[in-house]
Image (cartoon, rainbow, N blue to C red):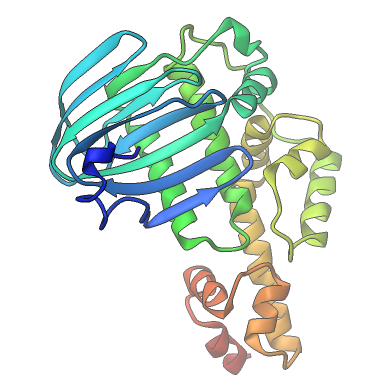
Length: 291
């Protein structure tokens, strides 16, 4: 949210200098800072969540759809502006916010595929100073992934985005939609189909939608059933398999570690080393020496 024209000179050190910004097809994550000021936004096709990251509470005046809020907003509090809802804010003190925008098309898709309901029957509720620990946790994990901007994390970001939308629809919508529950995991024949696909595409930035489409189910339900079957999320399984492939190449070839990293779907030597150390307890170089 940009400050007004009267604030632009004072804001030179802050405006348009986001420390993290990532655009995707369905989600846009943007971290920004502003000096004291005011601003407004109106996104016709995007639902927007503004979460405070400021270490100290700030006094805000916010309004949307004829409703107004005046008071202190603490770190972790967020405001929700549904698509097509003009949003205005004035703040005292230096603002530090996380902005998460979700396309209306994607939210409708998740509502239809996951909740088996038409989004026209439900809508997100505008809100100020909302406290929701699960929303805070999900958005901060999204921010961390976007800050790292590492190749190979698409599957993880897709999973977080789906969970975020489902939670918003269940907890911050006009009605409480029913979430169908599927138990028992994925049938073995279909599970092997998914595992074979992952194995054949380890070096690519796999999307959750690609895996779910193999079984003609929603991304949210695919993630839940996969975890029931495998005991870990699709992203955790993908990371494990990439590490296993890297171990084989480290043992059997003399290829440079950076080449092995890229072949296994990691963005760099350091990205592989970080993941390798977390799962194996040593660096790829040390593993190759021991092997």
